[in-house]
Image (cartoon, rainbow, N blue to C red):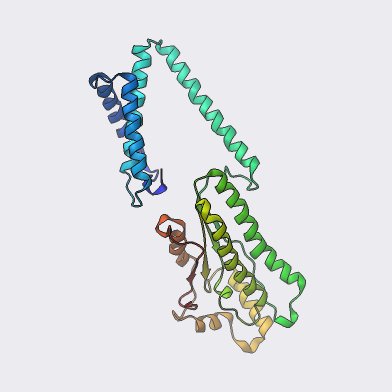
Length: 308
């Protein structure tokens, strides 16, 4: 079932589950004793209704929790029919039936645990069970050197994190999502510097341009698997890393060049730096199904600094 049709787990959810269970039990009793279909025909009809519900839900792109609760009621009705048949039709002793069902639940729990452990072993993402559908890759480092002073060590330091790190994480996440078989979404964090370089940041700007290109290539390769890959290109963000930017800016370009903040604000039509919270909306948009037709794009969230 699509995520947009699944309710969020909250107090309202558990209240609704309790009510649905009570209603489903009563509906199941009525269905079992009044329909006259019998256990086989009765469950067959419920299976057809459930299948029809899933088919409609599959092609509905709008948010409707109705599908979820319809399936819950169908399952609860069928479960009540099966329980009545086992207790009264097959005449299995209550204690034996209870112990047997408890054993089945334990067996399913054990199988789920083994599957989770197997998934952890199979992939290179430590501490996950490969059941996620969204990955946001945001690790990055900054550095400044003018072109004539760039060293191999500095180039390797920045590219190993910003580009190679993004590549390897995208690769690992893609493998897990492909194995899961239900698609997914990857959101990379690029930078406005990848679109509009600044003096003194040749390596950093090139690394973020590479992230944009990597995002496009990954998107083309992964979309056949239902995995969308996009990126966000932030402008100047007021974070703890910005203190490093300011110190490197003055040391690289000289004290007469002013501050990095002043330079960035001058290039930004909105006239100020941003805060991390101002990127949440863009990230949610790229992560959710509202952007289902957005593939391989880099979203500028930079106050108008880059208009292309």
